[in-house]
Amino acid sequence: PKNYNKNSIYKIIYLHDGQNVFNDFGANIPYKWDINCVMETLVESKKIEPFILVGIDNNDRRYFEYSPFPNNYLKHKFDQVQIYGGDGDKYADFIVKELKPFIEKNYNVDKNFTSQTLLGSSMGAYISLYIAGKYPNEFANFGLLSIATWFNQDEILKFINNRDINPNKHFFLSVGTIEMQDSLVENFSQIYLESNQVVVNALKKQNLDVKNVIIPNGEHNEKTWKLILPEFFSWLNKR
Image 1 (cartoon, rainbow, N blue to C red):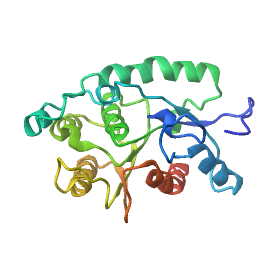
Image 2: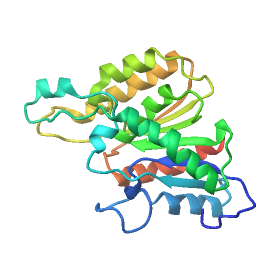
Image 3: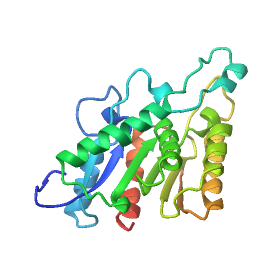
Image 4: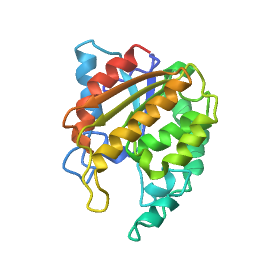
């Protein structure tokens, strides 16, 4: 946070697509999450406590690292689609076994399970859901914005349904009503809405705490994800 104090202990949020989330010049996109500015505004108005924010930049292997499962079935449906995915376990292990220990060694992080949050959008939400099942005791809170479950819905649901997810985990999901248009995929926005609900149902089936927000006219972009951040922070501040 802006007024980081070495004598204070902070809850922490790890974010995927790190170059797109802060108010700086690192993203080659028209809009960014501006999560640092959103948080500081809420802190200054005393609506939330400050968090440490850790943005994890992606690279040109984003579609490989953000899924442990290859999207083979898409290749069968659309010849133009390449096969991606498969390196998600390596990425998840990097976060838990390398990044988290480094951050906790060098910053005043509240190491309690309940103070650890993972936040991502689209494929970042997809890998976050996977990490929720793979590592039961590392993160308590998950923000899954516009989750790209369609990437390989069968495998991620099979994985989640076969895991006993820690009952103390909490999930915040959001999805827009006009997420995306694609010339290759008919009704892509409806696919996002339906697959989001599938994830909600799977988590609730395990009696987990789930908040689901439908954003009218929400799109699949940083501008929409920025709009939902105050509600996400308010939800997280109560955990």
